[in-house]
Amino acid sequence: MSKILLVSPSQAASYGKMTPPSQIHMGLAYLASMVSSESVDIIDADSERMSQDAFADILRRKNYDIAGFTVTTPTLSSSLALAKEVKNESPGTLVVFGGIHPTIRPHETIANDCVDAVVRGEGELTFKEIVESLKNGRGLSGIKGLIYKKGGKTEEEGPRPLISDLDSIPFPARHLFKNKEYTYPDALYRNTAPIITSRGCPGFCTYCNANQIFTRAFRARSARNVADEIEFLTKEMKIREIHIWDDNFTMIKKRVFEIRDEILKRGVRAKFAFPNGVRADFLDREMLGALKEMGTYSLALCVESGSQEVLNKARKGIRLEKVEEVFALAKEMRLETWAFFMIGLPGEDASTIRKTIDFAKRMDPDIAKFHILKPYPGTEVYDYLKEKKFVLTEDYDQFGIHTPPIHRLETLSSSDMLEWQKKAYASFYFRPGKIAKQVLRIKTFNRFILNLQAGFGLTKMVLSKN
Image (cartoon, rainbow, N blue to C red):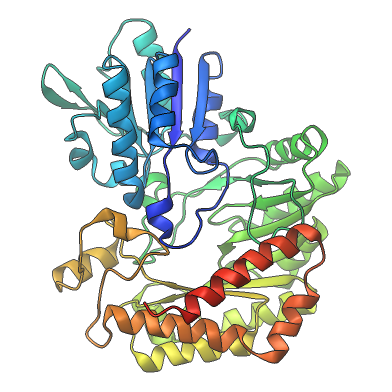
């Protein structure tokens, strides 16, 4: 039996002054489920508040055969620090990096002395083959989707085809996470769990790099398979609220209706929310009605900008008129609404940011998020800004979603973007009517605590001098 360690590194750098979220890493949970016959441990550095010394102590007590790290651009340095500890304590352990950053920049990643192999793209089958090959003494040769070191040289295998049947992947091994009380933003209940029912996005948004792993090919689990997992969560794990993290849950209308029918047929009683955001162009009255019937109470829309010109330049593929229509329908159906906006896209200036703020206030969602663009490697917007010499740093620690801007535009400096972000939050939330609405929507003690923390963090950010 192989001894495997899966690591979710600290996101502290990525979240800057804000507290990193305490949420199960679903990618690791799926990897663990694929090798469930082995001895698998998961370390979630932030939720376990694990120091580097404590990590090293675990390595000394248990000699792992494989250590796998899930890596984003802003968590690369924290991943490398822990990988070095693995090599210091157990030089024979195979260190594998996977995730979005190693997929986009595999050769840069494998160049680090502490990294033995890099998984590109979808990781479940590749990781399973790594485990089986080493267990049987076959080495890593011939494993699709892999770059690895052999005899002082870097070997590169061809790309791995996407998993065509998502139902074939076992349910994520949530039970391996030590923290049993993960929290999720604005959730009504403490016992909340995420679920992912599809992969792939056909969109061409210039700021998104998700298609680097799952591509633009949309693949979905069957309605029965999705309902099986939901039933397991609610009946076996006593989950009361489920957050659907898909990029495109509503892409195929017939499938949404089938999932709704399965949930109703089985008598599943749970609240559903879509905090990851959905596209307005896939929503209409019939679709929103189906979501409501299956138990949905909260819906987030990825709007990005109140300027149609900025949206067009970002190749978002939506019209603001459609967004307004969906917000009106959602409110008519008494659904809670979120809206995600982005400051600093190409074509942005002071006038377009004002349009975004005005649009947000006019739509008046329950929650509005005004993020500043982070031009991640692998995106069209990164290449554009890099060519213009508008990317101000290549320090990956600065690429976190809540760290200061790392780019400028012709019409806006990075400090301008920060000031506009503060103005957006203050203008949207610091209204007497809005504050009253926020108080009225606090329906449970769990939401009270989460909103209190969020409100404190928001106020601190708006009043900060940098």
